[in-house]
Image (cartoon, rainbow, N blue to C red; front, top):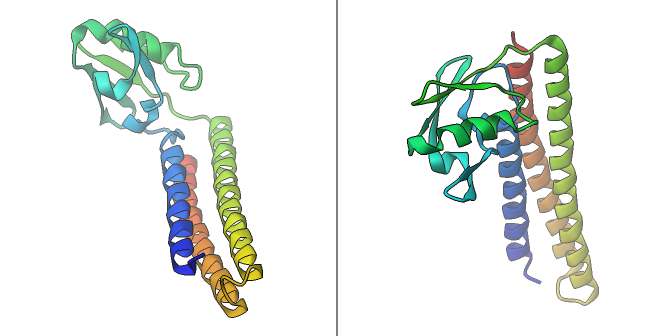
Length: 187
């Protein structure tokens, strides 16, 4: 086992977990329209399921409005239906024959509290993932130390470096979560 390579692998996995967290954050509603809200929408187009962003352009021209402009006008109804039928979005699209518009309703106090709970769960899921990455790396390092591939000092140094990487990732995730929570709770 090469401790330097193992540490690089751990940092890459932690970065991937943080990127996944950022992606999950973009899906949490804040009361403002944001094109990322529709990233999970799949549209029945050309006889197959396709991601919305591959069949249309999604913009937020106003704070409470999303506008979806299909690349092919024939997909307009399929886009509106896919958004309407998505239970996690709970949005009502309207179309004028050229574009689909979605008025984003303001969040109620209860909805804001629910979004804050979801945010907390996503933070916890990310940290569980990070701790699992740390646990696996430490197991490999301890096995390498037992088989005399690395010294005890190398193991201790590796543990310290992994803990520092984990602390750095936790600080970044906490900062992102705090910013998102302010967006959610701000009226």
